[in-house]
Amino acid sequence: MNESSAVLPQPDLEDVEVATVLAALADPVRLKIVRALNQVDESTCAALEVPVNASTVSHHLHALREAGVVQTRVAGRTRPSRLRAAELQKRFPGLLSAVLDATPPRHAT
Amino acid sequence: MNESSAVLPQPDLEDVEVATVLAALADPVRLKIVRALNQVDESTCAALEVPVNASTVSHHLHALREAGVVQTRVAGRTRPSRLRAAELQKRFPGLLSAVLDATPPRHAT
DNA sequence: CGAATAGTACGATATTGATCACACTATTCA
DNA sequence: TGAATAGTGTGATCAATATCGTACTATTCG
Image 1 (cartoon, rainbow over the protein chains, first blue to last red):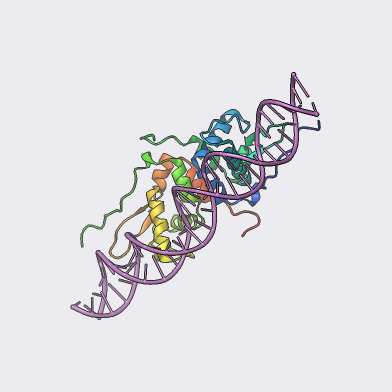
Image 2 (tube, rainbow over the protein chains, first blue to last red):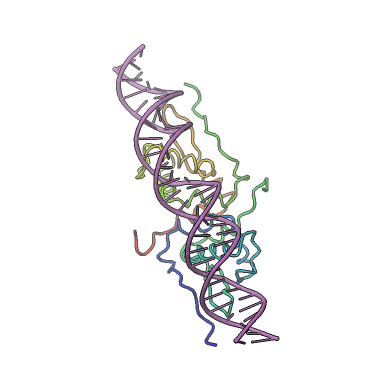
C-alpha cells in the first residue's frame, strides 16, 4: 500500500479551449455522467447508472478527463472520478453551473 | 417590397435541450461565427470572415438556427442572422455569456 | 430581359466518434 | 495461489457531420 493520491494524467485547464469543454459536455451520456458526479461528489465507473456498456463509460470518462472536466484518482481496483468544478469555475466562470442548472425542455423526450 | 420581417423557421427555445446548444457551440467554426455575431449584432453569410466555403457557412448557420442559437431574417438577396442572446439568457441563464467571455488558452494555437 | 449576386440544396467524400464485445491488467480476498 | 472484480485497451461497426464543388433559386440592377 502506498499513499492513495495517484491521479490519472489530466490537462492544465489554462491550456484547454472552451470548444473542447463544450464538446465534452455536448454528449447526452457524458452530460448524464456530469450531472451524476455533481450530485455525489465522487463516483466509480460501475456506480454510474448510465445505459451503456462498461467500456463505453470508460471511454466517456476518458473523454471528460482529457477535456479537463473530471479528475480521476486510483484507489485499489477502482478509479473514482470527480468534477473539477472549482477549477472550471476559475477558467470558464459560470459555464459549468449554467449547464448543470439547465432545465429539461417543455416536451420531454 | 413587402414588410421586411420574414424570419426563417426556428425552434421555441423551451423545446431545446442544453446538449443541443452545447453541440452547436462546440464546433470551432460555429464558435467563431457566434463570436462575430456578438460583436456586430447582425451579419450576412458573406460578411462573416471564416476560413471555409460559402456553402459550409450556410450549413453552419443552419445548424445554429436549428439549435436555437441564431435567428435569420430574409432581406432581399441576403439573410442577416443575429444571436438570440436574450432568449438564450432566459432559457439557459449564463450559458452564452460564459462561452463568449471564455479566454483563449495559454498556449494559443 | 439579361447579368450579377447571396444564399441554399444536393451529392460525394472523409473524418470523427459512439457503441459493443472481448481480451487483458491490476487488485482484492478467500 | 486462485477466483472474482474494476476498469482499460483494441478492433469492428455504424451513424453523424464537416467540408467542398456544383447546380439552383431568388433578388437586384443595368
